[in-house]
Length: 487
Ligand code: LRH
Image (cartoon, rainbow, N blue to C red; front, side, top):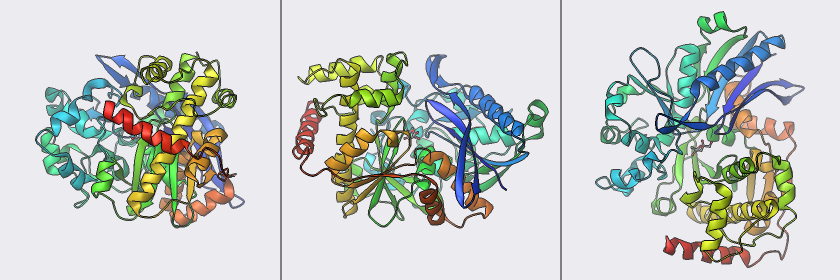
């Protein structure tokens, strides 16, 4: 029986998930979990990439102890961040986190002589100041000149494991430097940020063999023989593959640190409406496009959890929220101020005070404020998504950790008047595995993979509650317009 390992690393934690197909069902087991996060080092918020790599080997050692001698493995992580590698093949520094504030003016500066419309028409990618394009724009020029390879995080990890360097397209598209028309890095955009096409290892599609974990690692660790596949290296691309959407009119939310809300398309949608609403066309597996919006997501809840000294689990926090009435205040959860504040609870409270609303005080009030406003944001975006795509969304598949929050699933269903299908919560690891299975010839395509997911995992369905919260979404939309003017 073939064993697959998904190395799935998000901004707050990473895991190794072991998978196989038994009795026609996909079986998934978490064998190793570790923390992730950035800390200030040399003047910037940086990821400890060596720690992540060591943890991958710790996980593989556990798998070997389970008497598994051979695995296939693929890596997915968050997007946009990169490692600069020198001529000796080693990293020049630890990678800077996209939440570092070095890029706060970069969009304005870069687009002063390169219009946004031009960049969007070329790339179809949303304007976020953390995109690789703006990070490279603010990068130390001397360091860039010494750079032999610019590698996205999961590609770099694959390179350290195997010695082979590639640039996988689902993640590379988030750089905002790939040309939709040519399918290659755009020379004008690279020039603008002082980098050369050959500093990027060759572009490959998701589902490409990378190589075996090098001999040198086997000398140091007792691990299985490991064949590495370059899968959908962007975690969100993996999550979308692992989403059991059915029919034509479904949308998804990959609900983790970020909530990525969108639809899977066969052709990019980079027209004026999409541009105005800052929707993105990230590349998906097998020629698809992930037309989506980045929403601040559970990051807000993760920060709050930490600020309560982790005394509550996420399940506790959801239960606490349920003690309160929803919609006691409106919050634009995508306001930049929530991206990396010193103290999230304080920031939420200040926001409510400044907008003359009820200030949430207790943990249950804070949590209900977060969950009800995320649901409102989702419902508002679903309406926009339907408008841009020219057809209403009828089913919303929510996957990822956030799909466990029943309260949010129900509120979203009611506000947006859509059926919500929640689960699986491990869609990212599952999508990672499905691409490995397709590459290995064990299943044929994503459609077959999604059928396997639907029959292997328990999915929960939520229907809109009739005559509930009828006016709230309209009031919220009016509020968003008002604060947008104040901005
Ligand atoms: C989610 C994610 C998202 C990106 C962000 C940087 O983990 O990959 O798709 O926009 O991190």
